[in-house]
Image 1: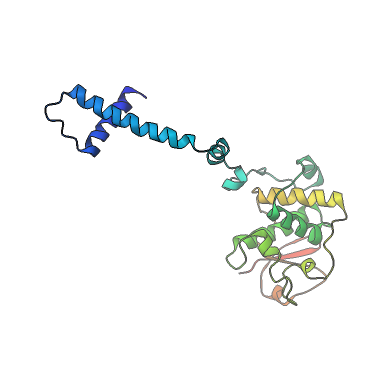
Image 2: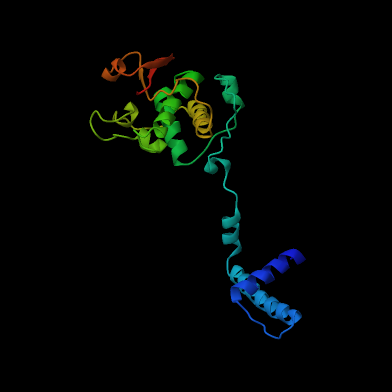
Length: 221
């Protein structure tokens, strides 16, 4: 402890205790305050020693960038297979798995650009107050209610089994990059999409923002 800090602590203790030392010398007063301060610090040390090393490590650990909402994806995305192949193998928790599964069943046959575009829609919905605030919530919204599911694969009655491992690895990387803050620059804030084979009613109301691969994209106004 530096002399300056020690002096300040002694002064604070003197004010808080309201000690009137009367005829005691300044040195005696300093000794009393130092003793009381030492006792307080001793109690603090004893309390800290009761905390396990594992708990101390957990309390002092710096959360990963993803938990602190710090983008870790590259600033520039080149939407091609070479770029995706250059990215490390992807993994994650439940939210990553939900997004990866949605991309697998909804867009695995699309180009890399098309996969990112579908992923942007899901991410944009999470950011919108109109939809659930989690990836799994958005993807499974309406599942189990006839004509209410938002993503067809969640209510088509077919088992959701991953058969194509190469495609799973690709969509997993796309999901990881989007969750890690990849720029969303393909669909101009789209919240809806459909294949060219259908023409839902809302497509006549919402403005179309992009057409990528087999999908048209729209933004709910």
